Figure 1 (cartoon, rainbow, N blue to C red):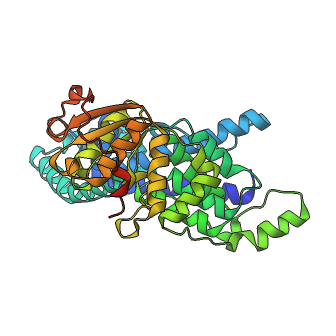
Figure 2: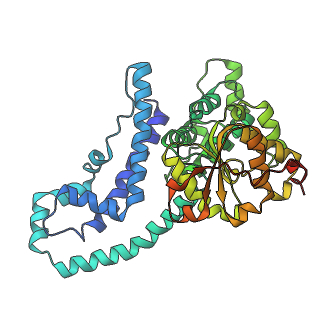
Figure 3: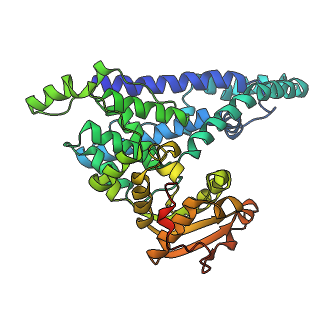
Length: 393
């Protein structure tokens, strides 16, 4: 194992063990009179759920790396223990589970003190757990929680040797719109191995937003894997400092749609036609469809960086039309707001011209979680042969 890689991995494990030692000192005060290993682990998961999950994700990440190394080189490198197995190696755990400690704890057990300690620890932890829950939920709100078919293609495009730093920025922006194991593992890999500082920090902060507790890599420890001298010089001295900021306007997205692979490969099961005033309930509809592994286009998730109300122009229309063409069907969220929306009427008229299926669900049915109420809309109340004339007013 290379020295730098071993140092980083060992540091990760030391941090995990130190974290669990601190947690177990608190847990040791609230154990039942006669406890088992399952009781100890259960209490840690209850009072430190996000911290436990951070270890689970690190284990999954290193396991994926080991499977790749084993397949390619016939040898695993990290061999990280499963969380429960690693937990048993913690010094505080060994102390708690020793027969002498358990016997003494049982003899000195006081129910009132144990309940008081439990309440105090929960009061201390509850607000922190809720704060992290809110942080994670806010981050997930900006994503779709499913895995579209083209995710592997996007990751493959990023990992090509000839993909520029600029194109990687666009690909990363697309991958950030989905929350699934493949994407999370991708960002862990970028945070761990990407030579470019801008890309690596984007991955780091993205993982932080979901509370994965990534470790920031120092540039001097980043390794260059190439035998080509000219490329090695470029990767060491030029590429790390390259920067590109994506222009956030409809014209830029229109250009990428016409010219970039990361846009051309997209396909959606549904385009959600709705009023922005109903966005809270639209998110519930998207989550329902995501649970069925359906990829949904929603402008304030999929193209939020580009489509802004103050920047509406002809390019906006071209983008919307392309997204409609990339969608197999449309779902119209029927409400007072959407019935009066020029954009909804534009989308419905355009999609009708494509001769594709238009589904409808009322805002009331979404509120009541009545998903069976989704129906094939035959009524063309929206029809207007001159609909394109009003779209930019």
